[in-house]
Length: 150
Length: 118
Image 1 (cartoon, each protein chain N blue to C red):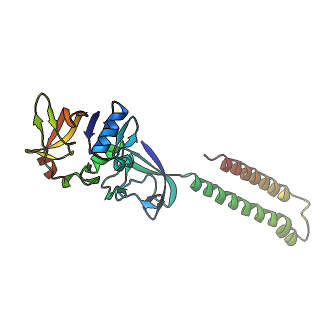
Image 2 (image 1 turned 90 degrees about the horizontal axis):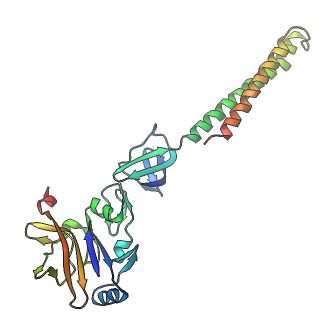
Image 3 (image 1 turned 45 degrees about the vertical axis):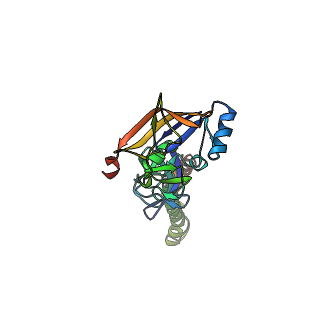
């Protein structure tokens, strides 16, 4: 199953029905979202935001209309896998744990904006191997940790 | 791009009774109904100005109706009273009648325009 994460938003693309069933049994329930699946909390994000209006348990900080993931990005929000809710991306303080083999892989779905050295994970795409329950990365994009401070 | 029905009350743009801060307002900024258009981080409140124009036309029609009433009063009441009876010579009555007719045509035209406002 291919999984992408960008702008605080996760998308899951199962190869077959078994993919989804096994992943959900090991993790959490997903919701159909267009041509893919996502976390239920993300499926409710509107494609616009107005200052002071709620986005999950947060209040929007900017007026914006685009796609839901762009709305998260513009409001500095991301989905927190551990909290199962949308949070300010600056509150993500987890560390990224990657293993280098034939491919870079991880035993856990990576948390967007988690820390790796002096960088934070900005976006990724990976393939979840159902047989070994590992995430094999195709792409890992980082941004400087300083971008949060400036 | 998204378009939302909105209103402007005391300088505050509202969508579904919720305020939209930092929303530029096009027009004079009086209380109104309108729409908020937003694309990426650009947005604006655009008032529906047709009600204002409709009100203006109504006021003009009302003014014309008052003038017609006054002219009719002069023609049928004031002049005969002062002249001791209906005026049978001179062009006063016909002149006033032509004026009233012209004003009534203008009233009809204004009401038709009001009905055609977008």
